[in-house]
Length: 66
Image (cartoon, rainbow, N blue to C red; front, side, top):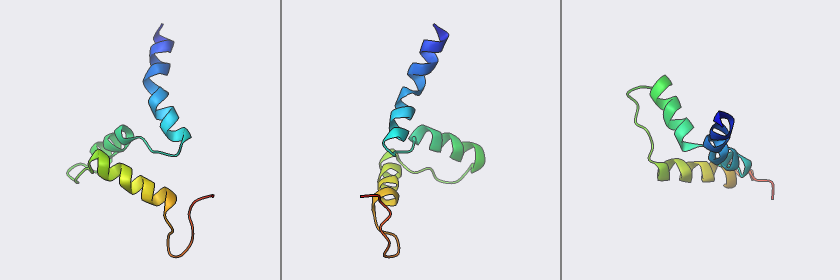
């Protein structure tokens, strides 16, 4: 039963990583642990930045596969 609970807890993170979207909760935990006192982006800011990094051109180079 514990194993099933653990799997269900991580399913959202798994599917997010599967489609290339980083986990906001992991980002918040990292910021709180390693960068205390620094501002934490809102979920919307975090998602928009992740989308920009994944799909937009950087320095004239396309950073996406298709």
